[in-house]
Image (cartoon, rainbow over all chains, first blue to last red; front, side):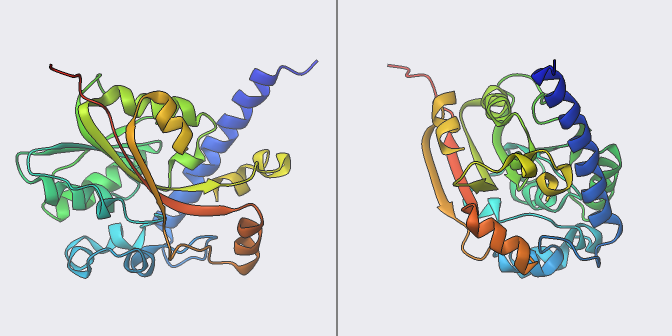
Length: 203
Length: 52
């Protein structure tokens, strides 16, 4: 007899590997072709200010793989603490760091420790202050009520446990804190063949 | 997602479609449209305790 929890855990592990592989590929080979638009063209399409894209390190811009612009409504203020869930090569975290200024704090969380190092290097190159921690969005490695704003861009849809992710965002936010996220949603239940295919799910 | 945010306790949950989002490959875009897949912008607030 098949254990559904065991099947899901195994699928999650495979999915994690595929996500790490795919977004590492975007970072390593930003001129490659993917299912999604990425890089400067995508960021401009979503309304990122050209001056942000000129100021940010080329590697962070080229590896941008978001689905929208979480800064549009984040209303970040100097001194705020920001969490970027799934920070990738760091473009959103870097922009957040500029906006919260030297008295603020930006923490990125990413599944992939290599991407964390890359994001921190990109941040340092642009004079931004950002810490990146390897971690899962289902178990955010931050204390309760320690964050003013959560931003995220095209990442939560990758989780099999979205309720858990939302609960974690709620937990780490201070009372009065807010989220500003862009993500992919589906009006219909995806077919089992898509759910069971890590390559399609990770896309 | 909208419902999950409300059920978790977030207030002032707002969402809007990201108008310019689309997949690069036509075949992927067509499949996405068939499933009603779209990119959305969501904002929400963690309520502060009532001090009164």
